[in-house]
Image (cartoon, rainbow, N blue to C red; front, side, top):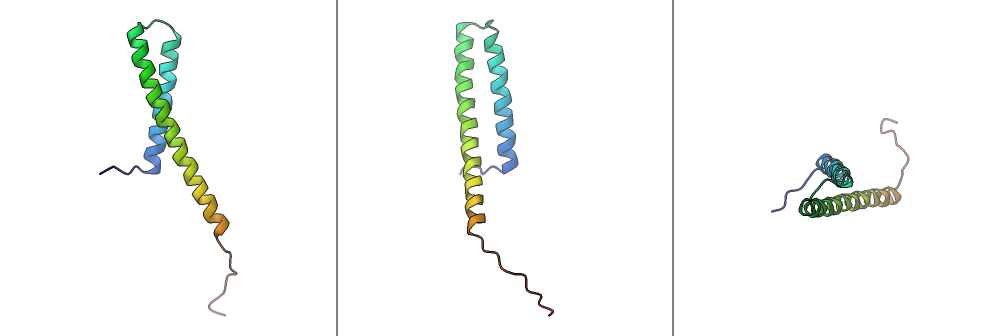
Amino acid sequence: MAKKTSDSETQLDFEASLKELEELVEKMEQGDLTLEQSLKDFERGVALTRACQQALREAEQKVQILADKSDQAELSPFEDKEA
């Protein structure tokens, strides 16, 4: 069964993935890697990019759901039950 992650875990995963991706880019830009290591890091970068894109899509869906719910909510006047 798939593990359900909380919003804070998703945010942490996103932040960690983004940080690792930035570090990979910096390392690759230095040009000191072998072709083999460059390909390995590139593969890892693609995987991290996909993970970040997925996290952003999920966040966008949550925002859309919340926005739709707030548009559908009906406001009713407060009634004082003691009156």
